Amino acid sequence: MKKSLVIILLFALVATIAACSSGNSGSTSPSPSATPTEGPKEPVTIKFYTYKAERDEEPWVEAVKAFNELHPDIKVEYVSLVQNNDSVEFMNKLDVLMAGGEVVDIFHAANIEQLIERAARGVVEPLDPFFDAEGVEPNEEYVQVPAYDGKTYGIITTMTQWFVAFNRDHLEEANLPLPEMGWTWDDFRDYAKKLTVNDRYGTYFHTWGEFPNMIAYNELPHPQLNVDLTLNFDHPSFKTFFELRRAMEKEDKSVEPYADILASNYHPLQQFFAGNASMIPTGSFAVRAGTLLDRFPHDFQMVYAPMPRSSTEVEPGATNVSGSFLGMGTRSANKDAAYTFMRWVTTEGANYLKDFTGWKKADGKQLLTTFFGEHEALIDLESLSRVMYHPQTRSESAGIAVPYGTELKTVVENGFTKYMLDNTTFEEALESMKAEGEKAINK
Image (cartoon, rainbow, N blue to C red; front, side):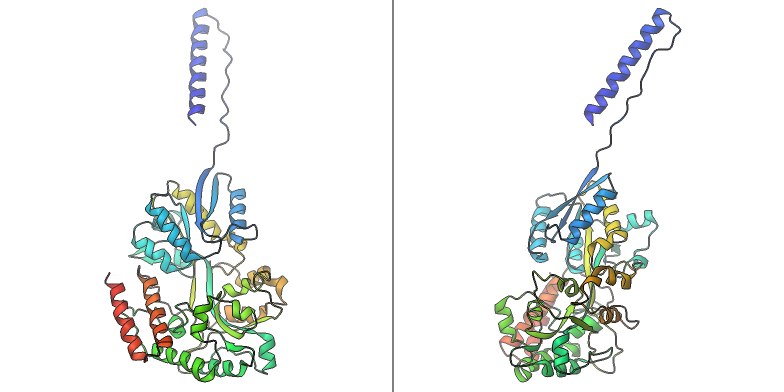
Protein backbone atom coordinates (compact mmCIF):
# COMPACT_ATOMS: atom_id res chain seq x y z
CA MET A 1 0.00 0.00 0.00
CA LYS A 2 2.86 2.34 0.85
CA LYS A 3 4.48 1.57 -2.50
CA SER A 4 1.26 2.43 -4.36
CA LEU A 5 1.00 5.72 -2.49
CA VAL A 6 4.56 6.67 -3.42
CA ILE A 7 3.91 5.92 -7.09
CA ILE A 8 0.76 8.06 -7.10
CA LEU A 9 2.57 11.00 -5.45
CA LEU A 10 5.48 10.80 -7.87
CA PHE A 11 3.13 10.77 -10.81
CA ALA A 12 1.28 13.80 -9.47
CA LEU A 13 4.60 15.64 -9.02
CA VAL A 14 5.71 14.86 -12.57
CA ALA A 15 2.36 15.98 -13.95
CA THR A 16 2.63 19.27 -12.02
CA ILE A 17 6.13 19.95 -13.31
CA ALA A 18 5.05 19.18 -16.88
CA ALA A 19 2.10 21.54 -16.55
CA CYS A 20 4.31 24.32 -15.24
CA SER A 21 6.85 23.81 -18.06
CA SER A 22 4.06 23.92 -20.61
CA GLY A 23 2.70 27.12 -19.12
CA ASN A 24 6.13 28.80 -19.17
CA SER A 25 6.57 28.03 -22.86
CA GLY A 26 3.33 29.76 -23.66
CA SER A 27 1.90 26.73 -25.44
CA THR A 28 -1.88 26.61 -25.59
CA SER A 29 -2.09 22.90 -26.46
CA PRO A 30 -3.23 20.69 -23.62
CA SER A 31 -0.55 18.60 -21.97
CA PRO A 32 -1.04 14.84 -22.13
CA SER A 33 -2.13 13.27 -18.87
CA ALA A 34 -3.05 9.80 -17.61
CA THR A 35 -5.01 8.69 -14.56
CA PRO A 36 -3.23 5.89 -12.71
CA THR A 37 -5.35 2.72 -12.39
CA GLU A 38 -5.37 1.41 -8.83
CA GLY A 39 -4.75 -2.37 -8.64
CA PRO A 40 -7.21 -4.76 -7.02
CA LYS A 41 -7.57 -4.26 -3.28
CA GLU A 42 -5.96 -6.85 -1.08
CA PRO A 43 -8.64 -8.88 0.72
CA VAL A 44 -9.02 -8.51 4.47
CA THR A 45 -7.73 -11.68 6.14
CA ILE A 46 -9.46 -13.04 9.22
CA LYS A 47 -8.62 -16.18 11.17
CA PHE A 48 -11.27 -18.75 12.10
CA TYR A 49 -10.17 -21.01 14.97
CA THR A 50 -12.07 -24.31 15.19
CA TYR A 51 -11.99 -27.78 16.70
CA LYS A 52 -13.08 -29.30 13.38
CA ALA A 53 -10.12 -31.08 11.80
CA GLU A 54 -8.90 -29.61 8.52
CA ARG A 55 -9.81 -32.40 6.11
CA ASP A 56 -11.13 -32.04 2.57
CA GLU A 57 -14.35 -33.85 3.50
CA GLU A 58 -15.00 -31.65 6.55
CA PRO A 59 -18.12 -29.51 5.88
CA TRP A 60 -16.63 -26.50 7.69
CA VAL A 61 -13.66 -26.61 5.34
CA GLU A 62 -16.06 -26.64 2.40
CA ALA A 63 -18.03 -23.73 3.87
CA VAL A 64 -14.90 -21.59 4.29
CA LYS A 65 -13.82 -22.31 0.70
CA ALA A 66 -17.27 -21.34 -0.59
CA PHE A 67 -17.29 -18.11 1.43
CA ASN A 68 -13.88 -17.11 0.14
CA GLU A 69 -14.99 -17.65 -3.45
CA LEU A 70 -18.17 -15.62 -2.95
CA HIS A 71 -16.47 -12.80 -1.01
CA PRO A 72 -13.20 -11.84 -2.77
CA ASP A 73 -12.78 -8.88 -0.41
CA ILE A 74 -12.51 -11.18 2.64
CA LYS A 75 -10.21 -14.16 3.09
CA VAL A 76 -11.04 -16.55 5.93
CA GLU A 77 -8.05 -18.53 7.13
CA TYR A 78 -9.00 -21.94 8.58
CA VAL A 79 -7.08 -22.67 11.80
CA SER A 80 -7.68 -26.08 13.38
CA LEU A 81 -5.89 -26.50 16.70
CA VAL A 82 -6.74 -30.20 17.09
CA GLN A 83 -7.11 -33.07 14.65
CA ASN A 84 -9.45 -35.22 16.74
CA ASN A 85 -12.43 -32.82 16.94
CA ASP A 86 -11.98 -32.66 20.73
CA SER A 87 -13.58 -29.35 21.68
CA VAL A 88 -12.27 -29.40 25.26
CA GLU A 89 -8.66 -29.80 24.14
CA PHE A 90 -9.29 -27.13 21.51
CA MET A 91 -10.62 -24.60 24.03
CA ASN A 92 -7.68 -25.22 26.35
CA LYS A 93 -5.24 -24.50 23.52
CA LEU A 94 -7.23 -21.47 22.41
CA ASP A 95 -7.21 -20.06 25.94
CA VAL A 96 -3.40 -20.31 26.03
CA LEU A 97 -3.11 -18.50 22.70
CA MET A 98 -5.50 -15.73 23.70
CA ALA A 99 -3.77 -15.26 27.05
CA GLY A 100 -0.51 -14.88 25.14
CA GLY A 101 -1.93 -12.06 23.02
CA GLU A 102 -2.97 -14.00 19.92
CA VAL A 103 -5.44 -12.05 17.80
CA VAL A 104 -8.49 -14.30 17.32
CA ASP A 105 -11.05 -12.97 14.87
CA ILE A 106 -13.58 -15.81 15.17
CA PHE A 107 -13.59 -18.97 17.27
CA HIS A 108 -15.78 -22.05 17.38
CA ALA A 109 -17.42 -23.13 20.67
CA ALA A 110 -18.98 -26.59 20.94
CA ASN A 111 -21.65 -25.40 23.38
CA ILE A 112 -23.05 -22.29 25.00
CA GLU A 113 -21.15 -22.85 28.25
CA GLN A 114 -17.78 -22.67 26.49
CA LEU A 115 -18.80 -19.42 24.81
CA ILE A 116 -20.25 -17.71 27.88
CA GLU A 117 -17.28 -18.65 30.08
CA ARG A 118 -15.04 -16.68 27.74
CA ALA A 119 -17.52 -13.83 27.42
CA ALA A 120 -17.35 -13.46 31.20
CA ARG A 121 -13.56 -13.18 30.92
CA GLY A 122 -13.92 -10.27 28.51
CA VAL A 123 -12.36 -11.94 25.46
CA VAL A 124 -15.55 -12.14 23.37
CA GLU A 125 -16.99 -9.15 21.52
CA PRO A 126 -20.72 -8.37 22.03
CA LEU A 127 -22.59 -8.56 18.72
CA ASP A 128 -25.53 -6.28 19.53
CA PRO A 129 -24.12 -3.25 17.64
CA PHE A 130 -23.65 -5.41 14.53
CA PHE A 131 -27.17 -6.85 14.71
CA ASP A 132 -28.58 -3.35 15.26
CA ALA A 133 -26.69 -1.94 12.28
CA GLU A 134 -28.05 -4.74 10.09
CA GLY A 135 -31.56 -4.29 11.49
CA VAL A 136 -31.69 -7.91 12.68
CA GLU A 137 -33.45 -9.25 15.77
CA PRO A 138 -31.40 -12.36 16.68
CA ASN A 139 -34.28 -14.09 18.51
CA GLU A 140 -36.27 -14.00 15.29
CA GLU A 141 -33.36 -15.47 13.33
CA TYR A 142 -31.97 -18.22 15.55
CA VAL A 143 -33.33 -21.01 17.77
CA GLN A 144 -30.97 -20.07 20.60
CA VAL A 145 -29.28 -16.75 21.34
CA PRO A 146 -26.26 -16.78 23.69
CA ALA A 147 -26.80 -13.87 26.07
CA TYR A 148 -24.82 -12.87 29.14
CA ASP A 149 -25.21 -9.80 31.32
CA GLY A 150 -27.75 -8.33 28.91
CA LYS A 151 -25.57 -8.67 25.80
CA THR A 152 -25.41 -11.12 22.89
CA TYR A 153 -22.09 -12.90 22.57
CA GLY A 154 -22.24 -15.17 19.54
CA ILE A 155 -24.31 -16.91 16.88
CA ILE A 156 -25.53 -20.49 16.90
CA THR A 157 -24.30 -22.54 13.94
CA THR A 158 -25.42 -26.14 13.96
CA MET A 159 -28.22 -27.24 16.26
CA THR A 160 -28.25 -30.42 18.31
CA GLN A 161 -31.62 -31.85 19.26
CA TRP A 162 -31.78 -34.98 21.39
CA PHE A 163 -33.78 -38.13 20.62
CA VAL A 164 -33.47 -41.90 20.99
CA ALA A 165 -31.85 -43.72 18.06
CA PHE A 166 -32.66 -47.40 17.52
CA ASN A 167 -31.05 -50.20 15.59
CA ARG A 168 -34.00 -51.18 13.35
CA ASP A 169 -32.84 -54.82 13.09
CA HIS A 170 -32.75 -55.22 16.87
CA LEU A 171 -36.11 -53.53 17.28
CA GLU A 172 -37.73 -55.86 14.77
CA GLU A 173 -36.03 -58.95 16.24
CA ALA A 174 -37.60 -58.08 19.61
CA ASN A 175 -40.95 -57.50 17.87
CA LEU A 176 -41.20 -54.04 19.41
CA PRO A 177 -42.90 -51.03 17.77
CA LEU A 178 -41.00 -47.78 17.42
CA PRO A 179 -41.99 -45.66 20.47
CA GLU A 180 -44.14 -42.63 19.79
CA MET A 181 -44.44 -39.18 21.31
CA GLY A 182 -45.39 -39.53 24.96
CA TRP A 183 -43.49 -42.63 26.05
CA THR A 184 -41.85 -42.45 29.50
CA TRP A 185 -38.55 -43.37 31.11
CA ASP A 186 -40.31 -46.38 32.66
CA ASP A 187 -41.16 -47.44 29.10
CA PHE A 188 -37.52 -46.84 28.15
CA ARG A 189 -36.38 -49.15 30.94
CA ASP A 190 -38.83 -51.82 29.76
CA TYR A 191 -37.57 -51.52 26.17
CA ALA A 192 -33.96 -51.83 27.35
CA LYS A 193 -34.75 -55.08 29.16
CA LYS A 194 -36.52 -56.55 26.15
CA LEU A 195 -33.73 -55.52 23.77
CA THR A 196 -31.00 -57.04 25.94
CA VAL A 197 -29.71 -60.42 24.72
CA ASN A 198 -26.61 -62.46 25.47
CA ASP A 199 -24.22 -60.58 23.21
CA ARG A 200 -25.50 -57.04 23.59
CA TYR A 201 -27.12 -54.53 25.95
CA GLY A 202 -30.46 -52.89 25.42
CA THR A 203 -29.05 -49.37 25.73
CA TYR A 204 -25.96 -47.29 26.40
CA PHE A 205 -25.36 -44.24 28.59
CA HIS A 206 -22.19 -42.24 27.96
CA THR A 207 -20.08 -40.47 30.60
CA TRP A 208 -21.10 -36.92 29.63
CA GLY A 209 -22.88 -34.68 32.12
CA GLU A 210 -26.21 -34.99 30.30
CA PHE A 211 -26.56 -38.67 31.15
CA PRO A 212 -26.77 -38.68 35.00
CA ASN A 213 -30.10 -36.81 34.76
CA MET A 214 -31.56 -36.56 31.28
CA ILE A 215 -34.86 -35.33 32.70
CA ALA A 216 -33.13 -32.16 33.89
CA TYR A 217 -31.85 -31.42 30.38
CA ASN A 218 -35.22 -32.12 28.79
CA GLU A 219 -37.75 -30.66 31.20
CA LEU A 220 -36.12 -28.07 33.48
CA PRO A 221 -35.27 -24.40 32.75
CA HIS A 222 -31.59 -25.23 33.34
CA PRO A 223 -30.03 -28.63 34.07
CA GLN A 224 -28.27 -27.49 37.26
CA LEU A 225 -29.86 -24.16 38.24
CA ASN A 226 -33.22 -22.73 39.15
CA VAL A 227 -34.29 -19.50 37.44
CA ASP A 228 -33.02 -17.56 40.48
CA LEU A 229 -29.56 -19.13 39.84
CA THR A 230 -29.63 -21.32 42.94
CA LEU A 231 -28.73 -25.01 42.61
CA ASN A 232 -31.60 -27.30 41.63
CA PHE A 233 -30.05 -30.59 42.80
CA ASP A 234 -32.99 -31.05 45.22
CA HIS A 235 -35.34 -31.46 42.26
CA PRO A 236 -36.93 -34.95 42.42
CA SER A 237 -35.66 -35.80 38.94
CA PHE A 238 -32.08 -36.17 40.23
CA LYS A 239 -32.98 -38.91 42.69
CA THR A 240 -35.31 -40.53 40.14
CA PHE A 241 -32.72 -40.73 37.39
CA PHE A 242 -29.77 -41.69 39.57
CA GLU A 243 -31.81 -44.59 40.92
CA LEU A 244 -33.04 -45.53 37.45
CA ARG A 245 -29.45 -45.74 36.20
CA ARG A 246 -28.38 -47.93 39.11
CA ALA A 247 -31.39 -50.23 38.76
CA MET A 248 -30.85 -50.69 35.02
CA GLU A 249 -27.21 -51.63 35.61
CA LYS A 250 -27.44 -53.69 38.81
CA GLU A 251 -30.90 -55.27 38.56
CA ASP A 252 -31.85 -55.38 34.90
CA LYS A 253 -28.31 -55.67 33.53
CA SER A 254 -29.61 -53.91 30.42
CA VAL A 255 -26.81 -51.36 30.23
CA GLU A 256 -23.03 -51.73 30.19
CA PRO A 257 -21.54 -51.13 33.64
CA TYR A 258 -20.53 -47.53 34.22
CA ALA A 259 -17.10 -48.56 35.53
CA ASP A 260 -16.38 -50.42 32.28
CA ILE A 261 -17.44 -47.43 30.19
CA LEU A 262 -15.15 -45.11 32.15
CA ALA A 263 -12.23 -47.50 31.75
CA SER A 264 -12.83 -48.07 28.02
CA ASN A 265 -12.86 -44.40 26.94
CA TYR A 266 -15.39 -45.12 24.20
CA HIS A 267 -16.47 -42.63 21.57
CA PRO A 268 -20.06 -41.65 22.56
CA LEU A 269 -21.49 -43.54 19.55
CA GLN A 270 -19.02 -46.43 19.36
CA GLN A 271 -21.02 -49.11 21.16
CA PHE A 272 -24.24 -48.31 19.32
CA PHE A 273 -22.75 -48.46 15.83
CA ALA A 274 -20.77 -51.57 16.77
CA GLY A 275 -24.07 -53.30 17.50
CA ASN A 276 -23.29 -53.68 21.21
CA ALA A 277 -26.28 -51.55 22.27
CA SER A 278 -29.70 -51.52 20.61
CA MET A 279 -30.82 -47.99 21.43
CA ILE A 280 -29.11 -44.83 22.58
CA PRO A 281 -30.28 -41.42 23.82
CA THR A 282 -28.17 -39.03 21.76
CA GLY A 283 -28.00 -35.76 19.91
CA SER A 284 -28.73 -35.21 16.24
CA PHE A 285 -24.98 -35.23 15.54
CA ALA A 286 -25.43 -39.02 15.45
CA VAL A 287 -27.28 -38.77 12.14
CA ARG A 288 -24.35 -37.56 10.06
CA ALA A 289 -22.00 -39.77 12.06
CA GLY A 290 -24.08 -42.71 10.85
CA THR A 291 -23.01 -41.97 7.28
CA LEU A 292 -19.29 -42.11 8.11
CA LEU A 293 -18.79 -45.81 7.53
CA ASP A 294 -15.01 -45.52 7.60
CA ARG A 295 -15.24 -44.43 11.24
CA PHE A 296 -18.38 -46.31 12.29
CA PRO A 297 -18.79 -49.38 10.05
CA HIS A 298 -22.30 -50.82 10.25
CA ASP A 299 -25.06 -52.01 7.93
CA PHE A 300 -28.25 -51.39 9.92
CA GLN A 301 -30.71 -48.55 9.50
CA MET A 302 -31.21 -46.04 12.32
CA VAL A 303 -34.79 -45.22 13.28
CA TYR A 304 -35.71 -42.47 15.71
CA ALA A 305 -38.07 -41.87 18.61
CA PRO A 306 -38.67 -38.76 20.75
CA MET A 307 -37.01 -38.40 24.13
CA PRO A 308 -39.07 -40.04 26.89
CA ARG A 309 -40.91 -37.88 29.42
CA SER A 310 -40.57 -38.26 33.19
CA SER A 311 -44.20 -39.29 33.71
CA THR A 312 -47.57 -39.34 31.99
CA GLU A 313 -48.44 -36.16 33.90
CA VAL A 314 -45.81 -34.18 31.98
CA GLU A 315 -46.68 -32.74 28.57
CA PRO A 316 -44.82 -34.78 25.92
CA GLY A 317 -42.33 -33.31 23.46
CA ALA A 318 -39.75 -31.65 25.71
CA THR A 319 -36.17 -32.31 24.65
CA ASN A 320 -32.65 -31.00 25.03
CA VAL A 321 -31.78 -28.47 22.33
CA SER A 322 -28.27 -27.10 22.17
CA GLY A 323 -25.73 -26.20 19.52
CA SER A 324 -22.30 -25.01 18.54
CA PHE A 325 -21.54 -21.30 18.36
CA LEU A 326 -19.26 -18.75 16.78
CA GLY A 327 -17.74 -16.01 18.91
CA MET A 328 -15.84 -12.89 17.84
CA GLY A 329 -12.59 -12.04 19.61
CA THR A 330 -12.34 -8.62 21.23
CA ARG A 331 -8.83 -8.12 19.80
CA SER A 332 -9.96 -8.56 16.18
CA ALA A 333 -9.00 -5.62 13.97
CA ASN A 334 -11.48 -6.72 11.30
CA LYS A 335 -14.73 -7.10 13.19
CA ASP A 336 -16.99 -6.13 10.28
CA ALA A 337 -15.43 -8.82 8.09
CA ALA A 338 -15.68 -11.33 10.94
CA TYR A 339 -19.37 -10.55 11.42
CA THR A 340 -19.98 -10.92 7.67
CA PHE A 341 -18.61 -14.47 7.77
CA MET A 342 -20.46 -15.33 10.97
CA ARG A 343 -23.79 -14.27 9.52
CA TRP A 344 -23.24 -15.91 6.13
CA VAL A 345 -22.20 -19.31 7.46
CA THR A 346 -25.15 -19.39 9.89
CA THR A 347 -27.77 -18.42 7.29
CA GLU A 348 -27.46 -18.93 3.52
CA GLY A 349 -24.13 -20.71 3.92
CA ALA A 350 -25.54 -23.20 6.44
CA ASN A 351 -26.22 -25.67 3.62
CA TYR A 352 -22.49 -26.31 3.33
CA LEU A 353 -22.35 -27.55 6.93
CA LYS A 354 -24.54 -30.58 6.12
CA ASP A 355 -26.06 -30.56 9.57
CA PHE A 356 -29.11 -29.33 11.42
CA THR A 357 -29.03 -25.56 11.44
CA GLY A 358 -29.94 -23.14 14.21
CA TRP A 359 -31.34 -20.69 11.64
CA LYS A 360 -35.11 -20.51 12.01
CA LYS A 361 -35.74 -19.57 8.38
CA ALA A 362 -34.18 -22.73 6.92
CA ASP A 363 -36.43 -25.41 5.38
CA GLY A 364 -35.51 -28.21 7.76
CA LYS A 365 -37.37 -31.04 6.06
CA GLN A 366 -35.84 -30.15 2.71
CA LEU A 367 -32.39 -30.06 4.28
CA LEU A 368 -32.87 -33.61 5.60
CA THR A 369 -33.47 -34.85 2.07
CA THR A 370 -30.58 -32.80 0.70
CA PHE A 371 -28.11 -33.93 3.36
CA PHE A 372 -29.13 -37.54 3.88
CA GLY A 373 -31.28 -38.57 0.92
CA GLU A 374 -28.53 -40.76 -0.53
CA HIS A 375 -28.16 -42.60 2.79
CA GLU A 376 -31.70 -43.90 3.29
CA ALA A 377 -30.39 -47.44 3.75
CA LEU A 378 -28.73 -46.16 6.94
CA ILE A 379 -31.09 -43.34 7.99
CA ASP A 380 -34.88 -43.54 8.17
CA LEU A 381 -35.84 -40.05 7.02
CA GLU A 382 -39.52 -40.49 7.86
CA SER A 383 -39.02 -41.12 11.59
CA LEU A 384 -36.19 -38.58 11.72
CA SER A 385 -38.36 -35.84 10.22
CA ARG A 386 -41.25 -36.76 12.49
CA VAL A 387 -39.06 -36.45 15.60
CA MET A 388 -37.16 -33.31 14.60
CA TYR A 389 -40.17 -31.35 13.35
CA HIS A 390 -43.05 -32.74 15.40
CA PRO A 391 -45.37 -29.88 16.42
CA GLN A 392 -45.02 -30.89 20.10
CA THR A 393 -41.22 -30.93 20.05
CA ARG A 394 -39.91 -28.05 22.14
CA SER A 395 -37.18 -26.88 24.49
CA GLU A 396 -37.97 -25.96 28.10
CA SER A 397 -34.69 -24.08 28.47
CA ALA A 398 -34.98 -20.62 30.01
CA GLY A 399 -31.82 -19.52 28.18
CA ILE A 400 -29.83 -19.25 31.41
CA ALA A 401 -26.10 -19.00 30.73
CA VAL A 402 -23.48 -18.56 33.45
CA PRO A 403 -19.66 -18.55 33.25
CA TYR A 404 -19.45 -21.51 35.66
CA GLY A 405 -21.86 -23.70 33.68
CA THR A 406 -19.22 -26.24 32.63
CA GLU A 407 -18.07 -26.57 36.25
CA LEU A 408 -21.62 -27.36 37.41
CA LYS A 409 -21.87 -30.04 34.74
CA THR A 410 -18.65 -31.57 36.06
CA VAL A 411 -20.03 -31.43 39.61
CA VAL A 412 -22.96 -33.63 38.56
CA GLU A 413 -20.67 -36.00 36.65
CA ASN A 414 -18.51 -36.42 39.75
CA GLY A 415 -21.50 -36.84 42.06
CA PHE A 416 -22.95 -39.52 39.81
CA THR A 417 -19.58 -41.30 39.58
CA LYS A 418 -19.39 -41.33 43.37
CA TYR A 419 -22.94 -42.73 43.53
CA MET A 420 -22.28 -45.50 41.02
CA LEU A 421 -18.71 -46.55 41.87
CA ASP A 422 -18.60 -45.98 45.64
CA ASN A 423 -22.11 -47.37 46.10
CA THR A 424 -23.13 -44.38 48.22
CA THR A 425 -26.71 -43.38 48.87
CA PHE A 426 -28.26 -40.69 46.72
CA GLU A 427 -28.40 -38.42 49.77
CA GLU A 428 -24.62 -38.71 50.24
CA ALA A 429 -24.01 -37.94 46.57
CA LEU A 430 -26.42 -35.02 46.81
CA GLU A 431 -24.60 -33.42 49.72
CA SER A 432 -21.31 -33.72 47.84
CA MET A 433 -22.82 -32.11 44.72
CA LYS A 434 -24.32 -29.26 46.73
CA ALA A 435 -21.01 -28.47 48.41
CA GLU A 436 -19.04 -28.55 45.15
CA GLY A 437 -21.76 -26.65 43.32
CA GLU A 438 -21.70 -23.80 45.83
CA LYS A 439 -17.92 -23.57 45.46
CA ALA A 440 -18.29 -23.23 41.68
CA ILE A 441 -20.88 -20.48 42.06
CA ASN A 442 -18.98 -18.52 44.69
CA LYS A 443 -15.53 -18.58 43.04
